[in-house]
Each structure stands twice: as structure tokens, then as C-alpha cells.
Image 1 (cartoon, rainbow, N blue to C red):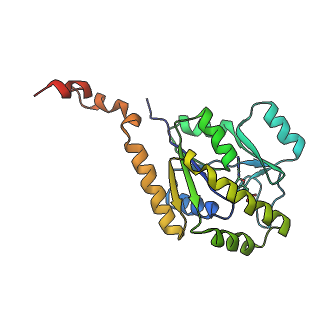
Image 2 (image 1 turned 180 degrees about the horizontal axis):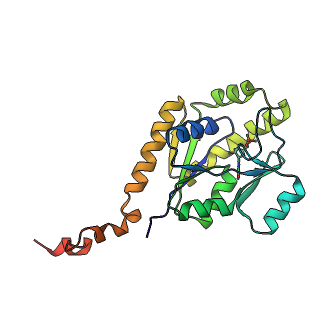
Image 3 (image 1 turned 45 degrees about the vertical axis):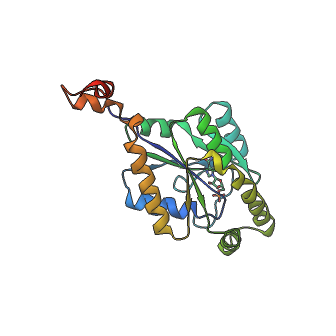
Length: 212
Ligand code: 5GP
């Protein structure tokens, strides 16, 4: 049986550079799939349907919730965001790794329902840098910027729910760290229980402790 793919959940405050880091990671790893979220937020300039998000109106999104189509969802700065379930399970079952770039409320839900994922928190080097990045992006109103900064300081309090933290001081470094994390996760004994079968006539883990 083919081993299930790894579910890689990436969160962190808005402005930490998750999107840029994920994009750079995926450019180096065409074998890894990105889950495209659904949202009620309006598209930003240059964003495309089905590439950045599936853009939905409120009623359609609430129907998706009602019909159990979402693996998780959250309300973030007055808009819904959620992960369509079908795509994620299909890819994992085919043995492909899947990245979810989602907020903390969503990541905690995934942890409840799918504890076997790897949970990575991305942080900017400092709060000042975070502020600079959100303001520099120039896509949000002052009101939304303030809400995002307020959220960010609350969100950092959830760091201990994650398995790994990556400081995004430079995108290339952050990508290398994520590569190392994924490699380490795949080498975990718990993810390689079938390995003994490849060593016919070999000892099981338990035999080794008694043989001399
Ligand atoms: P943005 O509006 O900047 O694209 O995204 C706002 C926040 O929503 C980011 O922290 C992003 O990671 C998060 N987000 C994007 N998609 C999802 C999703 O499917 N579920 C959850 N819970 N959060 C998401």
C-alpha cells in the first residue's frame, strides 16, 4: 500500500510572509500540492479564481459549511476562509504531500481532526518588521491593517500548539528550514512502520533488544 502523503500546515501572523515562503517552496517542490482555500474576501488586484482562492459569496460559503465540505474554516477580519476537504483527502490518499496555508483557528481545527499533520508556525524577525510588511503591502485600509496587527500579537500566543517555528528573515532560509522539517518528519519511525517488511528474514525492532 502506498504511504499516505504528509499534511503540512503552515500558519503565522498576516505579514509573516507565509504566502511568499509557500510559493518559493512549491517552486522547488512540484511534487507537493497546495490546497486552494475558499473565501468570502474580495479578490485583491491580480488575484485569480481557483489560483489564489475560490471566491464565494456569504451564502454559498455557509452552504459549504452546512454540507460538511470543509476540512476547517475560520472567520478572519470579517471574512470566511476555509479548506475544501475533498481535494486534500484525495491527494493525501494518492501519497502526495499537501500544504495548507491557513490561520491559527483553522490549524487548531485540523490538529483536532487530523493530528498526524506537521504544524509549522512562520514568524517575521520582529513585530516592527511585521508592521512594516503589512503597511508596505499597500493593499489594505488602515482599519484592516490595525485589525491584522492586533490579531498578530494574539496569534503569537498560540505558538506552543505548533511542532516547529520558522523565522522568515530571508525567504531562501525559510524554505530550507521547511525542507529540513519535511525530511525529518518523513524519517520518523512512526511514519515508516512498513520498513521491516523490506528486510525479509531481518529482525523486528523487538527482536533486536534480546539478540546478542
Ligand atoms: P489573506 O486575506 O491575506 O489572503 O489571508 C488572511 C488569513 O487567512 C491568512 O492568515 C491566511 O493564512 C488565512 N487563510 C487563508 N486560507 C485559509 C483557510 O482555508 N482557512 C483558514 N482557517 N485560514 C485561511
